[in-house]
Length: 181
Image 1: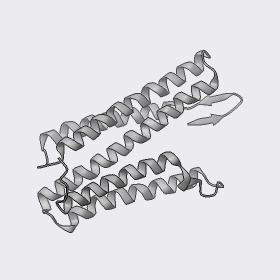
Image 2: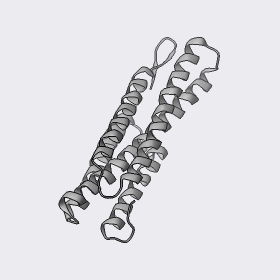
Image 3: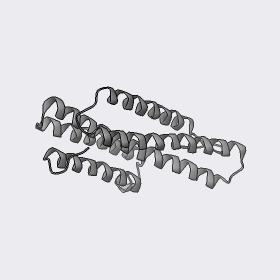
Image 4: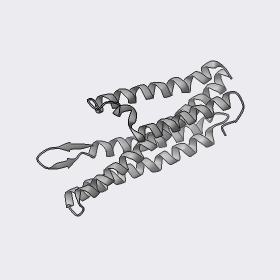
């Protein structure tokens, strides 16, 4: 998000575009899933996607505020970077909620079409593991030269714990110990 030049410049335009795209994607998915609902899980998925919508809107707002304040020079640079960090955290949490919603949604649709088969359980696992693998590669590139930094990222670890919690709920649902509404 930050580039060093003659003076410090915050590059938030790409993050604003990405967050806005995620807002559109979330709203589109919400509209589509309510047209063809799975037997169960629609309430949980809708709740997660609505929360992610709020977080993506905040990401756009915080990045826009940072961009405005940097240009107007009303706030110290340190405070502007707080807006950027806040936007980064809300975007990441929103993305985690989308990931968990997609895992539950895919799992529930598979249950409806394939029944309580191993395929229904494997889908959310493969989905999450693939995402984690891509994130690990990204963090490895991003933090190259900083030993263990890719796995020490507190925010990323918190998000992965939330995503793991989602997989635990899916396991419990699959074995009919706890059903996802």
